[in-house]
Image 1 (tube, rainbow over the protein chains, first blue to last red):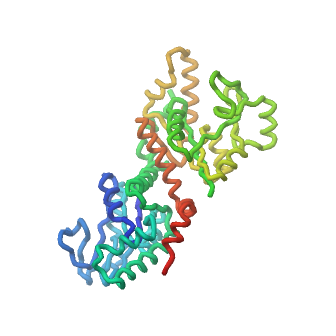
Image 2: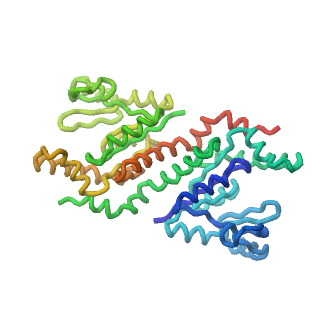
Image 3: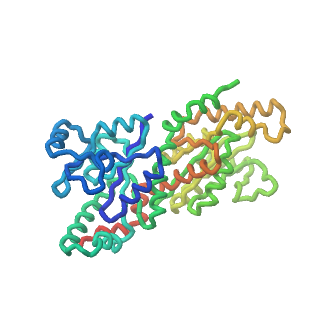
Length: 205
Length: 205
């Protein structure tokens, strides 16, 4: 019985990372796919936990081998999700979350049509701008560029199966949990999980 | 924005009625469709609340007018769900639960292909038989007939979208709540609900 791939996308400033962290930490059957990246590890980041850190040449070779389910370049660094890891973990029955942008979501949807895709929105324009402004240490130009990038991402909201508004964190988290729970209740997966119960219930004697 | 029709079926003894009661009482946006029936009202049952009580002639006329979304005969009494009530309440945006058997579910699915159908199973054969045995006042033949009917119902479990196991009541209730919550998060419904937010977020300035 194969697991489900959940793609979660959002503009920066929507709170996606905190939501995904809370979602996966509270659910042993739901893992996060570890991406490959060419960017250097930051202090505290661990190989194989936060990312697989690889050289640009290795990344390019993997692209050439079609080893990535999706990949993208952001600020000159490359990021990708290895097909093999996803396929192996789904086959084991794990559910997996991928935090990627709308372009990655499109690539994943093509390769895995039964992927569940979710877009997270901030509760207001003011909340979004506030989050993007950060700690007030960035120039107006930097903030304007972030806002433009967020708008660009949000314009693709309608390519996703589900829309979650991150107004209250606990409610948005409960939304994501409901999506995961519902997916596990689908008939074929549940019937496989409860095969013995069904056999026992359906015996006539 | 139209509401969703949820069909919930189960063998007698699976706890469906208590689950649906708890589900709908805790959710103001989720109503129960009131069936028409030819059986006499029992003490405490109210017209228009528990059932629409109608004479056999009236029921037959409604069948002839194709006024029922689904109808069935059980122990010589007829039961049906009026199309008009369902259509009107869904159009108003209400979500609705129908508690019907697999044959009714099949009729509803044909008329409303986007119905969400759920089958509830008891946690074990022993639990099922125990529930069907009731308070020990029925003959073995009556209990055997109930068990046969339950088996007949359960053989159709695989026609449903979702399978819920009523082992612990609170968990089964949370399963049903997740199904309803998930449905409301689907993109077109959410985008319609949050039209102003989307307009505000997507304005470039």
